[in-house]
Amino acid sequence: PIVENFFLPGGYKTSVVGHFLGGNVACGIGMLLGSRLGVRHPQILRDNGSIINGVACAPAPYVDINAARQCSSFITCVVNNSDLVVRASTQNTKMGMHFLKT
Image 1 (cartoon, one colour):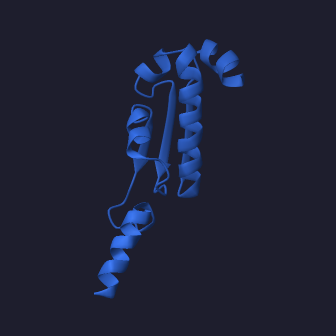
Image 2 (cartoon, one colour; image 1 turned 60 degrees about the vertical axis):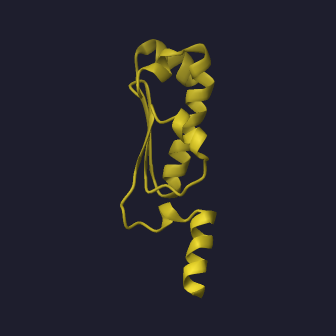
Protein backbone atom coordinates (compact mmCIF):
# COMPACT_ATOMS: atom_id res chain seq x y z
CA PRO A 1 0.00 0.00 0.00
CA ILE A 2 2.82 2.46 0.71
CA VAL A 3 4.20 2.23 -2.82
CA GLU A 4 0.76 2.45 -4.43
CA ASN A 5 -0.66 5.18 -2.20
CA PHE A 6 2.41 7.36 -1.67
CA PHE A 7 5.16 6.77 -4.22
CA LEU A 8 3.13 6.36 -7.42
CA PRO A 9 0.89 9.44 -6.97
CA GLY A 10 3.94 11.49 -5.96
CA GLY A 11 5.79 10.52 -9.14
CA TYR A 12 8.52 8.65 -7.28
CA LYS A 13 10.42 5.78 -8.84
CA THR A 14 11.16 2.57 -6.95
CA SER A 15 14.43 0.68 -7.47
CA VAL A 16 15.39 -2.52 -5.70
CA VAL A 17 19.04 -3.59 -5.98
CA GLY A 18 20.91 -6.59 -4.62
CA HIS A 19 23.96 -8.80 -5.07
CA PHE A 20 23.99 -12.62 -5.05
CA LEU A 21 21.16 -13.72 -2.71
CA GLY A 22 20.19 -10.07 -2.26
CA GLY A 23 19.83 -10.02 -6.03
CA ASN A 24 17.28 -12.81 -5.75
CA VAL A 25 15.43 -10.78 -3.13
CA ALA A 26 15.55 -7.72 -5.42
CA CYS A 27 14.12 -9.79 -8.28
CA GLY A 28 11.42 -11.23 -6.04
CA ILE A 29 10.38 -7.83 -4.72
CA GLY A 30 10.43 -6.39 -8.24
CA MET A 31 8.29 -9.25 -9.52
CA LEU A 32 5.89 -8.88 -6.61
CA LEU A 33 5.50 -5.14 -7.08
CA GLY A 34 5.16 -5.54 -10.84
CA SER A 35 2.51 -8.23 -10.59
CA ARG A 36 0.48 -6.57 -7.83
CA LEU A 37 0.64 -3.01 -9.07
CA GLY A 38 0.76 -3.81 -12.79
CA VAL A 39 -2.90 -4.88 -12.78
CA ARG A 40 -4.19 -1.58 -11.41
CA HIS A 41 -1.47 0.62 -12.94
CA PRO A 42 -0.52 -0.92 -16.32
CA GLN A 43 1.82 1.97 -17.15
CA ILE A 44 4.27 0.49 -14.62
CA LEU A 45 4.95 -2.47 -16.89
CA ARG A 46 4.80 -0.47 -20.14
CA ASP A 47 7.38 2.11 -19.10
CA ASN A 48 10.30 -0.36 -19.32
CA GLY A 49 11.32 -0.10 -15.70
CA SER A 50 11.11 3.66 -15.36
CA ILE A 51 8.70 3.45 -12.39
CA ILE A 52 9.62 0.09 -10.82
CA ASN A 53 13.08 -1.25 -11.49
CA GLY A 54 14.98 -4.20 -10.08
CA VAL A 55 18.70 -4.77 -10.57
CA ALA A 56 20.34 -8.04 -9.55
CA CYS A 57 24.10 -8.65 -9.65
CA ALA A 58 25.04 -12.34 -9.89
CA PRO A 59 21.71 -13.77 -8.74
CA ALA A 60 21.29 -17.50 -8.37
CA PRO A 61 18.74 -18.94 -10.84
CA TYR A 62 15.33 -19.42 -9.24
CA VAL A 63 12.61 -18.70 -11.82
CA ASP A 64 11.80 -20.42 -15.09
CA ILE A 65 12.32 -18.86 -18.51
CA ASN A 66 8.67 -17.75 -18.84
CA ALA A 67 8.73 -15.80 -15.57
CA ALA A 68 12.07 -14.26 -16.50
CA ARG A 69 10.72 -13.06 -19.84
CA GLN A 70 7.59 -11.58 -18.26
CA CYS A 71 9.59 -9.32 -15.97
CA SER A 72 12.45 -8.55 -18.37
CA SER A 73 11.08 -5.03 -19.02
CA PHE A 74 11.66 -3.92 -15.42
CA ILE A 75 14.29 -6.29 -13.96
CA THR A 76 17.92 -6.32 -15.07
CA CYS A 77 20.40 -9.06 -14.14
CA VAL A 78 24.13 -8.42 -14.39
CA VAL A 79 26.23 -11.58 -14.76
CA ASN A 80 29.98 -12.12 -15.09
CA ASN A 81 30.76 -14.80 -17.68
CA SER A 82 33.01 -16.72 -15.28
CA ASP A 83 30.67 -16.62 -12.26
CA LEU A 84 29.84 -20.16 -11.14
CA VAL A 85 26.85 -19.41 -8.89
CA VAL A 86 24.78 -17.96 -11.71
CA ARG A 87 25.14 -21.19 -13.66
CA ALA A 88 24.40 -23.46 -10.67
CA SER A 89 21.09 -24.84 -11.91
CA THR A 90 20.09 -28.47 -11.47
CA GLN A 91 20.53 -29.23 -15.16
CA ASN A 92 24.00 -27.67 -15.28
CA THR A 93 25.04 -29.53 -12.13
CA LYS A 94 23.95 -32.86 -13.65
CA MET A 95 25.86 -32.07 -16.83
CA GLY A 96 28.95 -31.12 -14.84
CA MET A 97 28.78 -34.36 -12.85
CA HIS A 98 28.55 -36.29 -16.11
CA PHE A 99 31.73 -34.62 -17.39
CA LEU A 100 33.54 -35.27 -14.11
CA LYS A 101 32.70 -38.98 -14.27
CA THR A 102 34.10 -39.38 -17.78
